[in-house]
Image: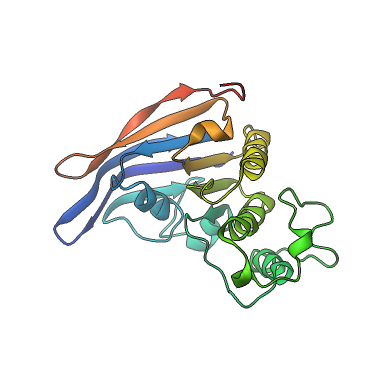
Length: 223
């Protein structure tokens, strides 16, 4: 089990404090971080993913401080940002191969043989930059879900997806519920039909947002 610990996380830009205090321990299961626009949800996920450094405090991944053991920590993380950024000129198939090769995993034959939940095979030879936002999103989610990382970080993963793709994403998340740590923000969590998740709230205050400890939640597919 890989636990993510936030110890007194603070993040500011100049005199502007975005997050004043974030302390929690996120273990196996699904953790939903909510909050108003501008509360710092994306900033918090970026710090957990090692994209940016906290002004103060520590991010601990599996007992290791990410700033001191970056390579080992990053190997256990897969991160899908809200924006779909990748090399526009490469084909979908090449993009998937490149992603997994950078993680030390080689795919010698058909990249979609054992895993193609979002139906990417039909677009294997299409350039990433020529895809619609929804299909670009599917490519990124294919990568991070297929990585089978101990820690999965998803920032607004449903943006741009149709109902079928959202349903598949929710199914994949529920399948890994007891086998990894999933941390996400989502403007419409009901669409994912999450079960047995824990909710946290970044509450915006005058001197920076505070992360309030979560409560258990459950959203059945029938709600």
